[in-house]
Length: 76
Image (cartoon, rainbow, N blue to C red; front, side):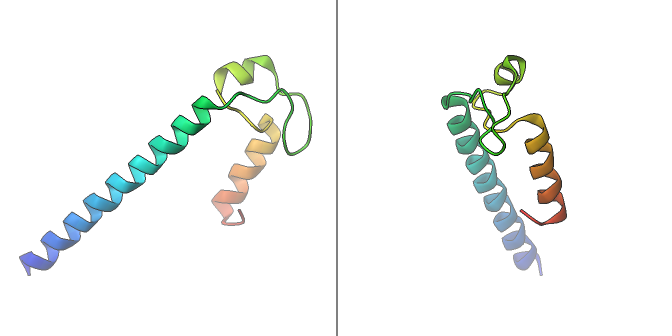
């Protein structure tokens, strides 16, 4: 029985490491991109404060909030 538990634990650790590495790569890509001055979804100006606070920002706060709500509901 311990063998199955050990393998499951190792698999979970590998998946966690892979997920963290993917997140780090994604975050690094975002940080290396230039922030947009207009939302790529609705073309509303993105405030300078948001551009500074979120390097590589692509969406205005309203579109970002909508996207996050859709992801939580499983729609995006």
